[in-house]
Image (tube, rainbow, N blue to C red; front, side, top):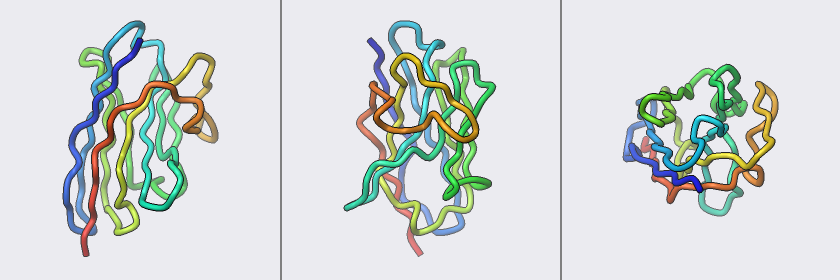
Length: 129
């Protein structure tokens, strides 16, 4: 079993930055791909960035590429999402998740919500003008 807990959301002005953190605990944490997803009101949950269990592969959605950076710290069992140049449309609840068995993360795949089975409660990010 894997437990996931996010932190770091808040209110920020457009153009600003935030860093989200996600602490993962439980069995075989290092064997899991980890990801960040977000869901805005009235919209489906979307995968925005995922990182492979080895840390060697990352995926970014086009909407965040070049602005967001995912990283993981194995010593702290934590994955981060550095968000720069935030836009109004980045407003959403952000979720961290660990994958089910068998997901392959590359630059073009491996970040679909149905493939991730262990979810945090979410942290809200509000970008104001």
